[in-house]
Length: 81
Image (cartoon, rainbow, N blue to C red):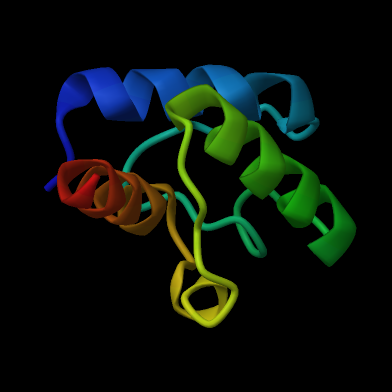
């Protein structure tokens, strides 16, 4: 499970895109709960990469369906750098 600081940072990046005002939690999904389209998700990925100074591999993205999964992936990549 990702650290609270990582989750809070990602929540902050999601907030302007959260048009449905869905509750943000590790299990919140991008497609169903937030109803984000693929272009918006790619913009969010770019913001996350800039914020954490990382690159999320494109082959990893289809497996990242929830906020918690993204936070875990961010922490794994940050830890490898």
